[in-house]
Amino acid sequence: MEKFNNIQSTGIPMPIEHIDTDQIIPARYLKATTREGFGDNLFRDWRYDNRDQPIEDFVLNNPTYGGSILVAGENFGCGSSREHAAWSIYDFGIRVVVSSFFADIFKGNSLNNGLLPVQLKSDEMDIIFKAIESDPKVEFKVDLPSQTFIIIGTDYQFHFEIDTYKKMCMLEGYDDLDFLFSLEREIENFEEKQVIF
Image 1: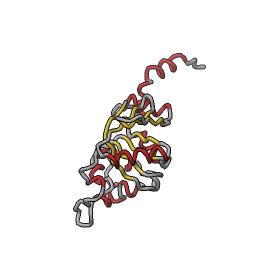
Image 2: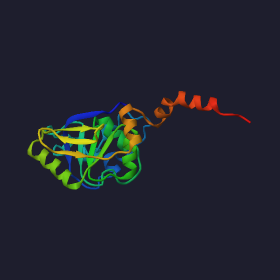
Image 3: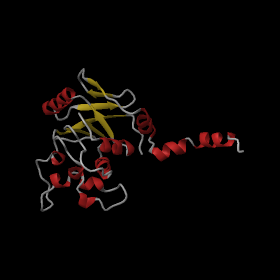
Image 4: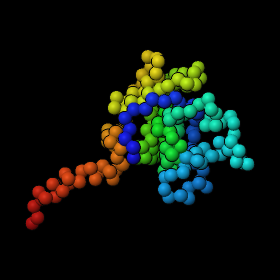
């Protein structure tokens, strides 16, 4: 995984509640076993019509909006446990999803794949959506070391929580196996000190 420290970007507003993983990446696109290429089909049924033509008023097709931060409605990533949902968002170029609530499995899958889920309070989300509505080019900074979400050019700074272990892994660019390999020398030292009876 890439190391994550902080990101400054405009935001993509998607204030829809209960977006499930089948909407994020439809089941018919789950045949691949590697992570590459899933971004092409992110929100496929919302981005394209039945003739494979872009739906102009869908936010990801709207040139007004862009960036690597998705600002989403409550209960994002509900539904099935498919890890491909996190893969598709990451492969599309989004590095942060902000919501007032995430489905637990989606949240875990995101953290395991370098996608940062930032959970904020509902009133803080309202402020962020209004900031984008007022100025689609407003920028946000997500600072992982300080666990802070900042609206650039304002006094708004919102704190978010993250598991200490997952925070370390994201800062170092580790998945769970990378973390174990980083302890290889310590594990070997421990094993060498064990007394065999």
